[in-house]
Image 1 (tube, rainbow, N blue to C red):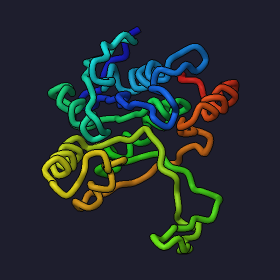
Image 2: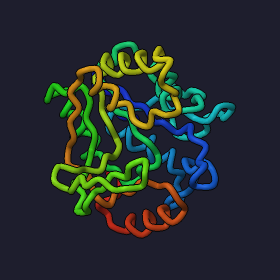
Image 3: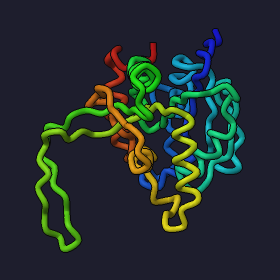
Length: 230
């Protein structure tokens, strides 16, 4: 059954990465018999309707139904910019997800969207409070103590006020001092431009798939029904 898209809300799945650290494009790796990218599309579709998906340049989309698909660029920023250009004309808010977080749930999708739509934030992400002590490594190799109070680990999905996201993308694209490949997460720029970025409670076990063994762990965790996409 096709999910009806809420008025003014749209979705994006960023799946154009090369998977250098994973050893191959990880978005096409299988988890419980399903490609990570297809799982991400399924989650976003259930939350906000069929998304725009960014795929590697030259790849022809062959997954579940989507609103549109685009060839991504050489960086997250370029892929995001291309996907934003294909969003429905009435979109005011957008949910952005990454296949590298395959254990994300609809509850998290709805929470980050609510923080933007109802809470008035410019952007929202899921995050969990780390129990570990955080240190910053200085250029000379020495350590600076940061502690753990107030420290959180950012996750996806993320939600944005689309006008603010467009402003951040335009700013980055026009900034000659910034390499698009150096931008790993656009909320940093939204903050710099005066936007309000908030977090909602995330899940410590919603692991980022970086190496093949991360996928092995996801297989194990998926045995718990709490991680199914309802």
